[in-house]
Image (cartoon, rainbow, N blue to C red; front, side, top):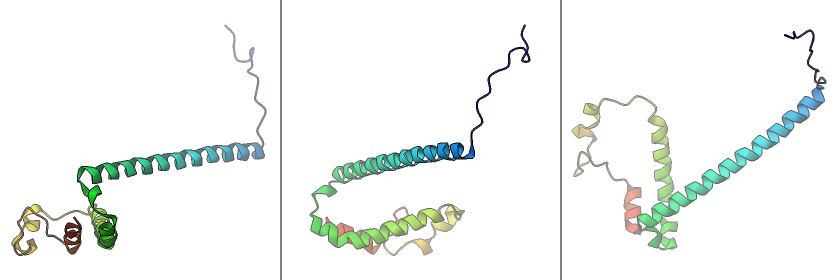
Length: 126
């Protein structure tokens, strides 16, 4: 049986700080390329999903002029939904409080969310 003293492993030459910095810069560059590629693929996947969704809902038949006219309202709606999504992290009130008559718009069903002007503008666009 050999011991470590009898068979010492050859030591690697010590890296200088400049060598370590260069290696880390190369790693950083590789990671940045990897990140850009991942973001590009996610964007491509999202674009395909949106196109498929619009086609499935037959919204791709609406003329571009109507989309252009409805775009400001759509942006407001999406921004409001995004802000509501960040508020979803906060604890919500119990269901008994949210389904009360004070929260129901006149003429709207309890299970149906109230329509906004944006949804009406989108409805007119189709």
